[in-house]
Length: 247
Ligand code: PGA
Image (cartoon, rainbow, N blue to C red):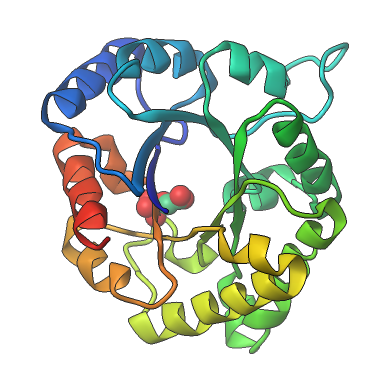
């Protein structure tokens, strides 16, 4: 399975989201083996779910808390995401890790909680520029992937997003993507054997319709997690079309 997801981050108001969904739906034709998803901010989840209903587009949240309910002011539970019409949830995005201190320990709990509510988690991993320059890329990814050892297997999408390529316009070179995706593929096999090989591995970081075709040709790249370019329905449609064409 290949999957491309629009990560809207902290962008869009209600009317913009509605206009995006209508424009996207008008030209979107689903294709077996390729999923398209939108990850709006919490306030727009239900709205996007209503607009996307029947179109085949899946709704993802950008984060959630692992406790099912209670006194956790400002947090949102997996059950609440399900109730709002979500299909899945992004977990461990680098902005969550680096700006808000998301820990691997919490991610283990969040993955398990997502599965309990039958949400598809998209686990994001990636190295910083300092870590890459110091030659630690694979060690960092190995450590981030160890959460999957703690959880055991379950339905999952993995997103490799080098932190230095996110929102910077500086996309990773195909050779760099190839090395990392092959490494992640081997790690998934080591951790979950056959179940690991079912996990699609997305690339993310300054993806645009201009560079995505080349990225999709890299072995073990099974789609993308897209920020900036996903705010424009025409661009996102192109990215989905490119993913479908790569099947
Ligand atoms: P970008 O963001 O496409 O704007 O680099 C990707 C992401 O953070 O998911």
